[in-house]
Image: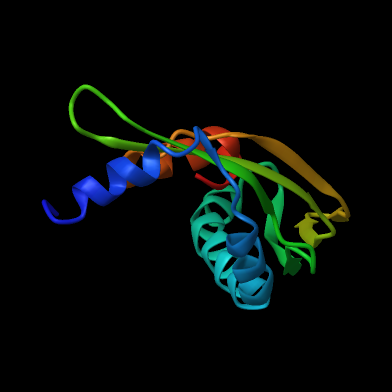
Length: 147
């Protein structure tokens, strides 16, 4: 780390906000795989919550019929990188996402079936990433439904 620290300071000092077009290309190429992985995590996290309500409120079952975040990946508009007084490197990505998801949630009640579909998602903003726990907290603050 001591060998890379001077390099990081030099890189950090060039501009406050970085152009990350290369990272957007990488995310775009990886998006079909990331979509599948993220949807798998969403399914596994939401399954216990769905099961908790079976039998309550006349709910017999609830599950995703379809779950895909679509073909449009999120894009990074820029990244701010700075060092704190505690010698901690803080990364703030500016993320914009206008997705075309295919999310269908089906619930079967005692006498009725309900289907809810999400056809459009849009989000943008900054998240402060300074550690693994902070990354998870930032994601939960942005998308509390899935945490």
